[in-house]
Amino acid sequence: MKARNALLVLLTAGVVGTAAWLVFFSPVLGVRSIEIVGNLTVPSDQIKQQAGVPELHPLATVDLAGVQQRVLGIRQLASARVDRVWPGTLRIEVAEREPAAAVPAGAKVAVIDGQGVVIEVKDAVPPLLPVLKVDRPAAGDPATMAALQVIKALPATLQGRVREVRAGSAEGVSLLLSDGRTVLWGGTDRPGEKSRILESMLRQKASFYDVSSPDVVTLK
Image (cartoon, rainbow, N blue to C red):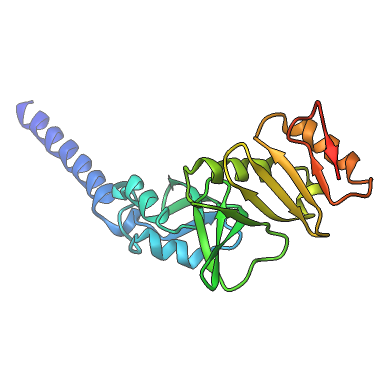
């Protein structure tokens, strides 16, 4: 009886040991494919290379947090989620940063997202992107963030007509339209009211529109 029990223990230990080896050390359950989801402009091959996971590396021991951190080293990406999909797939779901404005940078322009993060540097302003002009363009700068917030709040009917967004301060945002007309927007308050009023006022011929206080609007 004791010999039988001992044999059962040995067999059980052997099975457990073999299973552990298969899961944690063997290429049998290794990474055979990396699935990339959510990317629109960043190539999948670039994300896979940045992930840095060798083929057939045991899926169970992939450092998911480490992969996420490496993938987010691609500045065009705003977020990344990494999951194991058994038996052999590593799934990386990403969200790309959306361009919000272009900031002059010497002879080039820096394309930034709504958080002020530089996505890429280009030779010219991409079509339909407004140029952002502030004294100290940077993520966290009050004037920069106010201008970006105003851009985000504009309805699509107005966004396509804005050529430049200027901000001397967080309360002094102004818009230069593609037809040369200027709009004093003011601060980030009451964006819905300002948009509706501006759309109505633009039907009237003028070169300057002040909607900084929606209760008292002027045009010249």
